[in-house]
Length: 164
Length: 289
Image 1 (cartoon, rainbow over the protein chains, first blue to last red):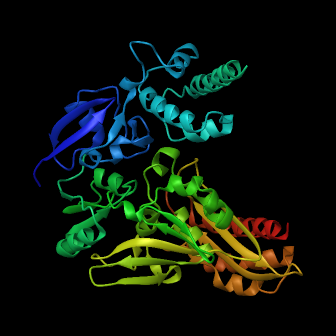
Image 2: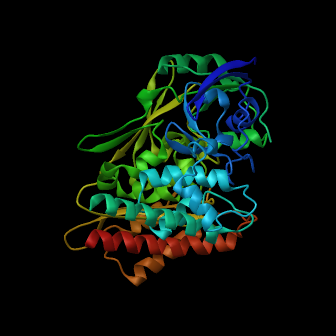
Image 3: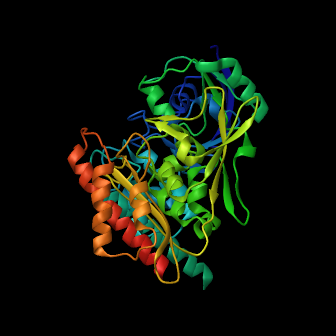
């Protein structure tokens, strides 16, 4: 069984840690790397709270073993803001009441960041479909949806201004 | 919810993976996307002694075309299949089915072959492969063999694959002529397991008579069900309300669903007939356009 040495990059910083093969990536990020922004909810891939970005794709970190992420590049919610500046998406979550207790928020932020990078102008239906992979037990979906829609609208305006 | 202990191997070549499989025999289990395997390990419904991780076998991650068929490597992520414009053009049924699988976040990791090998009887990829027809390539240390999709699924979560074998590639024929298809399913919430799923692919001749048809149903049997009696009955016919009702009668006789927390057997039987009619109608209309 034994332990494996795992070297990976999280938010641009390299971590070298040892872990048993059975350690979930979600636990590894929190316990070995000390990044507790990634939340652990259901641990079987349903709630989406643990979503992180691995090599440019949003995935469930509770459905990967840490050892599988050896050599990979990971982004967690701690990596979003730069020099204390929230990203526009984070700012809109704040303004549109996109979070209540905040437990589901890190996962939703990571999914949405990845999703908007690949689909800059999603419809409301498409945003809802993307959000179907996340559970908010405060049931605060309305604010979450508004925050994401506002981000999409703001991006469109930015593109227009840059274009003109 | 943490999985039991296991040994972990991460082969870099197919050959190495097959050797490891042979050595570990019944104790070894392949992990690819892990979107079904890891939950059942976390819940301790499964406790393999040894995991062989094929995520580094990049040669098994591909979508290729020739004139007659689409070839998809087993490690190809479901989201890549979903986004592929070539798949959409040549194998539209698949593009329509994949978005029903789980969620964006699980399709980013879940693999095409993994879904087939897991063989959940309500799953989308097995069902659409049954509707389009095709075959899979299965490799072991000794040989690579080709198995038709009709012979691949054995029963619940069980396929023709032996413990020392690995599914490497899926081959799907590109249908020619006036082709129509449809995939539909009913589930409690988006991304949940389908209560019943239905898929149909057909072609029409120049008189709008059905010249080839494969109606399949998921979630109503231990394997994806190819409704052969209905398919034979529809051959050479134009679509009519009477024909659809005959199909519905056959479907109600052919299915044998189970009752569970989510739906009764009676409701699933009812759904199977309704979805069968709906999916044939849509496929027919699309082929006739």
